[in-house]
Length: 312
Length: 264
Image 1: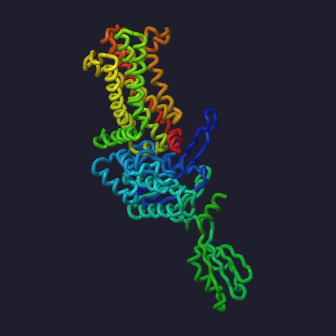
Image 2: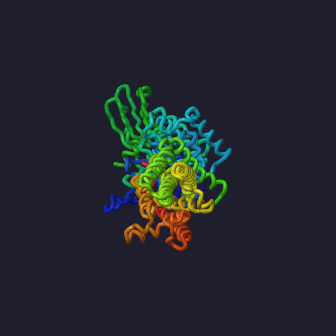
Image 3: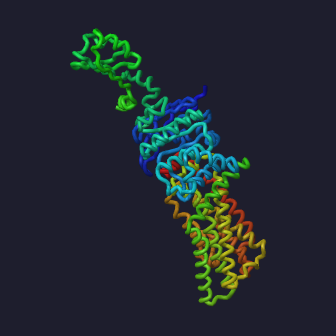
C-alpha cells in the first residue's frame, strides 16, 4: 500500500538576519506514515517539528530532498494536494471580527464550497464541535478552548484525507485537551483520517499515536511503534516483586526476559522485556515455596523513558 | 478557471472584505468623512483664492481622483494585511487558492467602495462648488473611472507584494505609494509646473494621462497626442509586472518561511 506520507532526505535552512549565516533546521530527514495512522513527531522546542510539518503541508519548500503526501509531490503538486489535506495549529488565529460561522464559511469557500454544500458542511462542523451556541460570536470574543475547537472545525471544512496537527492542545486546560484528544481519536477511528501531529507532550503522544518519531536539532533520531522502540533501545518494563521473608534464592538474571535486576531485602526490581507476557513465568520461578510473594507491581515502559533515552 | 469553485474562492475574499468594512467604523470614515473633508477644504480654498471656474474644476478633479484611488486600492492592499494582522496567513495559503482569487475578490470590493466615493465626492462638488461633472459624457466618465481603478489596482498589487516580502512593516506602503504617485501625476497642478527631471517621471505614471484626458473636456490642453493609448498600455504593462512580482514574492515567501513567520 502506498504510504500516506513519504519523505526522503528533507533538509531546510533559514537565513539569520540580513548578513547572518544560514541556520540548518532540518538535516536529511526521512519519514514514512501509513494511511489511517496517527503518527506523532516528538521533540523539544526548536527541534524542527513545525518546519517539517510545514514542508509536508506545502507551506514551506525544502532546500533538498523530496516529499510525497497522498502520492502527490509537496512542491510540484502543491495545489492539488491542498485540496485533500488541512492543518490546525496551536494558538488558533483567525480574523478577529468575523463570527465563528463566518470564519467557517470563509474557509469553506476557499476550498470551493458554496450554496447548500457549504451551509450543510458548516452546520455539520458547528454541531460536531458543539459550536452552535457560539456561531454568532466574533473570534476575538471566544475563549481559548473555543478558538481551538474552531481551528479543528476549520481543518475539517474540506473533508481532508490527511490532517496536520501542529501541537493541537498547547495552551489548553486539561479538560479541553482531553476533549480534543477524544475528537482526534474519533476522527481517526470513524473517518479513517490519517493524522500527523507534532507535540512535546509525551502523554498526549502515548494516548494518540500508534507510531512516533523523535526529532532533535533537526535530526530524526528514531522512529517506530512503542514496542519497537522499546526493543531497539533495550528498555524493559519495570517488575517489582515484594517477598514476605526475604527474596527468593534464585538467579534473577537467568529468569525469562530479565535484562537487569536489583535486590534489596524483601524486594526485587527487575527490568523485563515484554513484562506482561513474562510475568507468569517469573512468578512461577520465584514462588517456591508458594505464598512468599506478597505483592507484584508491573509498570510498562513509557514514552518519557524512551524520549529520555533517545534525546540524552 | 473552474466555475463555480473559482467563483466561490473569489467570493470568499470579496465577502470577507465586505464584512470587515461593514464592522469597521473607520471604513465609514474612509468613505464619507475624509472624502467630505477633502472636498470641503479644497473647494473652500479655491473660493478663498477666487479662482475661475475652470481652475476650480481642475483642482476638484484632483481631489476626487485622489480619494477615489486611495479607497479603491485599500481593499486590495488590505487583502493580505487582514490575514497578517489576524496571523491567519498560513491558513489562507494552505487552501487551494490562486493569486487571482485574492486580487479579483478584494479588488471587487475596492472597486465598489471607490465608485461610491467617486459618486459622493462628485455630487458634493456639483452641489457645493458648481462643478459640471457630466460634461465629459458617460463615455468620458467611464474611461476616467477605468483609468483610476487600474491605477488603484497597480498600487494594491504592489502593496500585496511588499506585504508578502516585509509583512506588517509594509502597511505604511499602502498609503505612501499612492501619495507618491499622486504627487507626481499632477493632481492639483499641471505636470508642466514640476521641476525638470521630475516632469519626466510623471510621463511613466498612467494616471497622468487619464487626468489629462478627463481635464481636456474642461478646456485644458492635451500634452500628449494619444493619452488613452499611453494610459491604458502603461496600466496593463504595470499591472502585468505587479502580478508577476506578487507571484515571485509568494514563491520566495514559501522558500524563506515568510508565511509561517507572519502567522506567529
